Amino acid sequence: MRSLSLLTLAALTAFAAGAARADDVLDTKMTNLASQSGCLTCHSVKAGHKGPDGMKPIGPAWQEVASRYHHDPKAADGLVVTVMRGSSAYAPHWKAQVSGYAMPPNAVAITEADARSLVNWILQIK
Image (tube, rainbow, N blue to C red; front, side):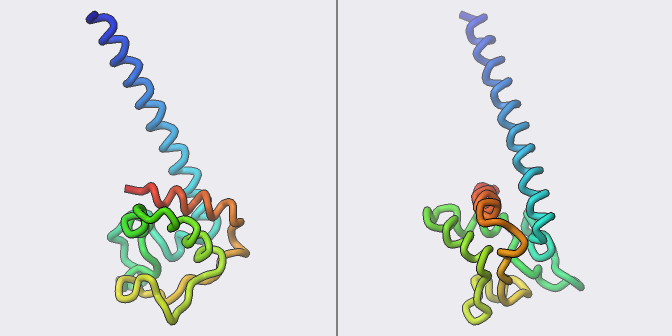
């Protein structure tokens, strides 16, 4: 019985380590995609970063985006549209929390498939 428990524990530990490595690989892949697409010019992954000259950040941190939208099953579709087409300066989503007024359209910088992958990753950030 004890050897079975140790074997089970070893298997679970190996599984968890493999899952952690897979998460690290995905984090690196998505961070690189965001960097290459220009996303990190306005956004950060973690909350608490300042914008230029100590102002509020230009766009919300993705940790905050995930916190706001993780419970909404339609959020990914709406956020992909926002990434691709941009947002309206007349209806800001993050008013008074960021220094930027609107997100510019990004269809020239990222494909819709890559935007969807990035948004899905963002929504999983804790």
